[in-house]
Length: 95
Image (cartoon, rainbow, N blue to C red; front, top):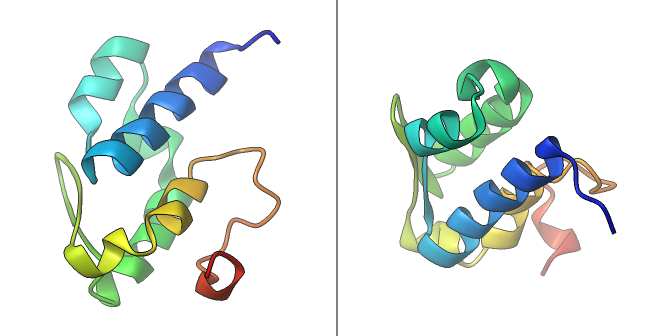
């Protein structure tokens, strides 16, 4: 299976979230030469909804998943998966 650059940095993002419950925008930007907030504007809008629900905290430097959000970490990670069929914050599909 061949991975393109998009696949690689999306995988890195999902791994950071699932393994460490946080995401550092600057690290991704430096390693993959992208502007994170521009590239993932849609995902960030959906993360904002999760932030309002108290699942995570967003800041100018990254995303930090709260303990309540750890239970739904797969949903958070799916927002960055371009192959995921559903990109909405529908918790019941994972639970």
